[in-house]
Length: 150
Length: 220
Image 1 (cartoon, each protein chain N blue to C red):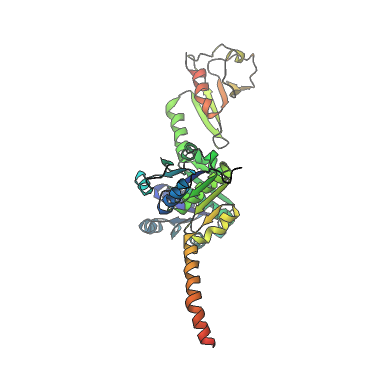
Image 2: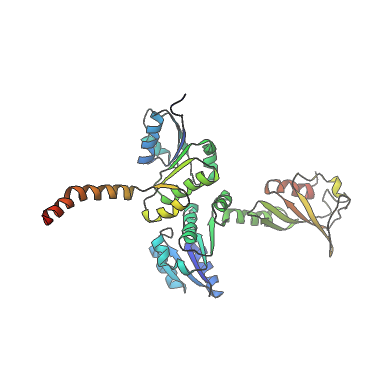
């Protein structure tokens, strides 16, 4: 009985987030392929990264096919461009039936549409924003409110 | 009045807008480049909105909710996909069209519910048609380019003249659908013999198209 499966993970975009995830998944023993248009971006990968690096534009179906997207268990689109991430995620989900797909987006007001299209999105703007707002709301504004009301 | 929203830039957008306006349409352009927006607004009787067409706020500002047609023709395929999806899903634009560079994206977009045409494929078809084979009078890709329909004229040098269709070894999944002999259209059968001057309507998959054409026009 296996407790966990060795996953095949494709990461599109080797920026800070992409490289961080690639390193983590690779260290955890999963097979990782990172795709980026810029070879230099692969310098962010750690010395111990044991996955594959592919130079290419992931909005080209040919590039995704070369990365053997049909076998992927997980596809993470983490480039700096929302629309690339959204397109790659949809192609992965709808055309290649990748079981789990995630797109990083910066512009939050389109999330509803991609939820409707069944694409998981993660938005750093709202995550960090909510975190900061909660932090200050808890430690600062609530105190003020209590002082004000008492 | 027909209302058209175009997202993109360059000379093509300029001339396309001019043509649409001349035909009586009202055109709004969304463009990311401030200087180009100024130029377009001066030169055309169109509304020009400065901004990113894949941003719902900009689409709203450009009146996407009231247009009949949206054409997404930025240089980036992924932007055109998102623009059309937003136009359909959020603004219920009745007709949308994306121009893409990568020919594979015609099929990809189609599967994602967006009609798309690849400028690369269109240009390549025109070049093939004009420059490649003089015998081909017409070349029409149908079904997003999945099938090619061509009109081939047989001249005296064609290796299939005097042969019946049965004797011609046509590639699998290709077909001579009609023979136009003078004014007379013939539905060909196995025993139909081909003559010089016949115009053949050939249906083939794009992959086999070249093979079919050389079989009919080149002496081996």
